[in-house]
Each structure stands twice: as structure tokens, then as C-alpha cells.
Image (tube, rainbow, N blue to C red; front, side):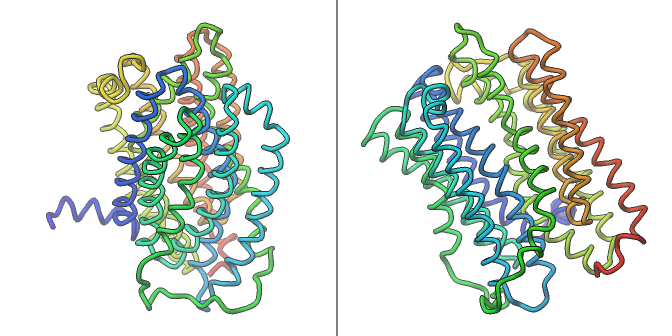
Length: 429
């Protein structure tokens, strides 16, 4: 391995490269799915499918990412080898969250079907399925990350991506139209879970499933703050195409679909950043739990340097090739301007910085402060959006202001947290 490659890998947490391989497959399959749906349905008919995609990532990761993070953190910090008590308690909490969201979706089914999904009831079914599937998927991924089984974590993404694409080909042939694509979105996480749990297990990483149920407080103590932070994060990630849908005029029915596809291209680096995020929290939590704060700080700084470099490269590539990639991938009906691609890529680069700092704050037991930073950033979105009248530009600037505010707040909070370590580290190790 060359020194440069070794240096880059040295900046990444354990498991990031392995998970990144799974995300490469998932990403390619996801963009194949989006391209197929876009070209098959056209900009206007594709919009409800795009909104289901955005809504599933708003509700799914928004509500279940905290469960994954807390399971990963608690499991990684335990030294008694017992996984079962944590998983059973987390499963009970997750089932309750799925039930609340599912009941809400059923009560609002008419609004969802006719206001968002253009009257297609199968897209509502797809939304219900994806809620259950993502809840289960995040629980499994948290357990796998906590015990260091990143091979299984990677297989989740492979199964999810390839499963979605294969299901789309089958279901569209059976039921046709947008509904087939919606059902494929809903069923894909179940394929991912099956793939994650398949395969041989490393005996050195096997944890016992025995033991009493973990007291809910061990997990739920931080879940409130994490839930606020996660929903805020998901709003940051997914509110922009929904905002375009709300703000679009009667003659702009195809604009949300155009905006979403441009956003997906600009967020390719953010998509693969999930590989880093999956392994970052267990690593930082382990260092904090061992009282090795200097190592934790150095690991975070190395990662931030890498993230800033990759973000800058992504902005340059979007400026040069972004519009061409959108045209080639989705067709001329989805064309956007270079300005749109640069602003969307810039917000994605800053968002990666904010997500890195958020993981560090969670590891340092500062979930509440981290949540406040996301909320502060989210407040900036409607303020900036209200100042303009260009549909895409006002949303893009609002998104950039949101992630910049959140990242700046987290940086300040992280510095303050490290300076006060002598107080909050008591009893952590």
C-alpha cells in the first residue's frame, strides 16, 4: 500500500472501508433505480416517487437513527459480552416508535395519498412498509456496529440497494406505474436485514444473547435529545425537496422531481460518508470510555481534514460536470443550472463536517447540546427561504445557511466540551 493511501486509511475509523464497499454497491443500485424510475415515468409522474423517497428518509432515519446510535454506543462500551439485553430493550423502544408513526400515517392516509402521492394508494403502502423496515434495519445495524461486525453492516447496504432494484423490475411489471416503484422502496430494507444477518460469524466478535432485559433508562436516557437531533438532521437532509413541492406554483409540477435528482447527484459524497459515520461513533465512544480524550480529539481532527478536502473536491466536480451528469443520467427534462449544483454540493460538504462533529458530541455525552445545534441550524431555513422568490435558489441558500449554522455551533460546543472534560469525565471510564 502506498504511503498516501495508508495515510488516508489511517484517518478513517475501523470498518469505514468495508462499509464503504457496501455503500458503493448500494449507491450504484440506488442511482440505477432513480434513473429507471425517472426515465420510465417522466418528471411529473416521477415526483410522487421522489417524494416517497425523501419522506422515507425523513421519517425513517429521523426517528430510528438515535436507536442505532445508542445501541452502537452502549454495546461498544460494554465489556460483559452480553448483547441480548440491549437489543431486546432497544427492540421494544423501536417497536413503540414504529407503531406511533404507522398510526399517524394511517390517520393521514388521505392527505398523503392525494396531496403528496397524486392519488396512488400503493405509495402509502410503500411508506408504511419502509417505516417498519427501516426501524428493524437501524436496530440491526446498531448492534452490528457495536460489536464490530462491519461485514454484516456492509451486506445490509448491498441487500437494500440490489433488493430495491430487483423488486422494482418485478413489481413494475406486475402492478405498473409509480406504485410498483413505491412498493420496491418499502420492501428493500427487509432484504437488507436478511443480507446483514446472513453469512459466517467471526467467533471473536460473537456476543451472548443471554441475560436480563436492559433497564430502559440505559438506552432511553439520551434518546430524547438524540431524537430531537435526528429529526432535525433528517429535516435538514430531506426538507428541501418537500419545500420545493410546497412552494411550487400550479405550472411547476415537475420542479420537485428535478430538484430531488440534482440534490441526489450533489450528495454522492454524503452518501458514502455513511461508511465513516457508521464506524466513527463506536470508535470515539470507545476512546472516551477509556479516558483517552487526546486520541479522540486527534482522530476527529484527522477526519475533519479529510472531510474538508473531499468536500472541496466534490464542489469543484459539481461545478465542472454536475449539469452534464444530471442530463445524461435522467434526461433533458431534469436539467438544472451550474449554480444549483454548486450550492447543493456546498451544503453537502458543510453537512459532512456537521455530522462528524455531531458524532463526537454524542461520544462525549453531549447529546442535548448537539440537538440544540441542529435546532438552531434548522431555524435558519425558513428565515432565508422567506427572503427570496426564485424557487430553487431560495431553497438552496436556506439549506446552506442551515448546515453552516449547525456546523459552527457544534464546533464551538465541541471546543467547550473538551475544555470542561475534567468535570464530565468523572465516572465515564
